[in-house]
Length: 171
Length: 390
Image (tube, rainbow over all chains, first blue to last red; front, side, top):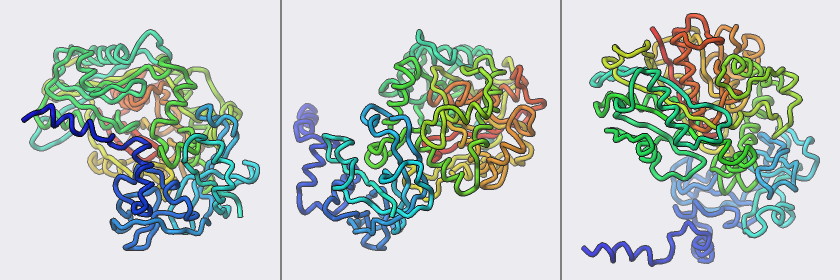
């Protein structure tokens, strides 16, 4: 066996795609949008569903929502998972006001509020809480997702990236 | 450990490197010092070691940590393994070592880990590095800007909401564990603190303040596990593993539906089931204390009090040296040392010292049964041991 050839082949092919480039290429394929497969678990859900409003992964077999995105449904192990438009409503399950930034990127935003939102559809997710002074948030308060084009985070975090982040405000 | 077909084994030596800030020592130097200290404690030499278990570093991207440590110590073991259960690693190492011996693969296992987590860069850089190390989901949590303490703050806030746990009760955990550190000459933080000091320390991520959080230090820890036969002619009384349990509930804190009950329920249940002892028989408990809230949740989930009663337990029953079951008597991660996975190994070391009546200045009288609990990640991964000197 010519080991040199066999080794070289995969290396010379386009990169195995943990790179961002690979992910973006995937997004560009129209037929791939809306479908989760094993590779997509590592891509960014919010980027993928941009344009659908607030959408969570929804199993087409049992109709249950879940988050974070998985390749099999955590409720029924179904594999047909697609974005399901969700209400964007929820309540604060827990929160913390952050006074010390993990790195320079976040320093200017201090203090900021990180919450766990219990969505009306069931899944929990981590999000930023905005809109009122940090000390006014409390567990149990009703919140709704802020449209991503209103989010002050979009421009302030990850300036050069396409990551969108869920932001919730009191309703 | 009783495995019917295999050789039974015991803990025969424990030791650590200098702890705190040791800028002159790199990870391998620290691990060598810890290994030598544990071997000396056992009355063994490096040439007696034929099994090696270690865990990955955070300060360097070592490929094959077990191979790096074997090379660094000049070992050619018959069994070697890199294992990583984060904060639960220390507890799990003991059980894994005993399983390796029971299977007949080796006779004497050195478990060793540690690094220069503080001196490698700085306290600030270490915090920054940890915030980006995968404890928060890299796509769905980390970009929001949580610190590792924020992930635990979410637990604390919810615990306060559900059960009325107070910041004073959490502060009491820090004060008691600091009091233990004061009596441990190896501990890094040894100035007395009061509940008021904790409450007025700088807010990091509400409701957790600086003194609710583990410190960051350099250091390495080691233990030696060998067969009961081999232990007979060694220096000190061996310590037995009577029961062990593992527990897993979630990987990321944002995904779990419950923030206040953990996999420690399962690890504790199994450990007590194997050991066939009652909770009231435990003389000393070395509970993983990455944050003050962690200890409160563990007291509940391991069954030392009811769910939601951890705060009141700390306040009324107490976890100090004069309490019915002193907790984390070496000073723990909050005050003694936290260099990564080796931090959780030190809880095992302290349990062994308590059972051998060697914990000078902080010895729990007649300690015959010790529980050790390790917690990995954001209260998602657990290992509980019950050790005895019966």
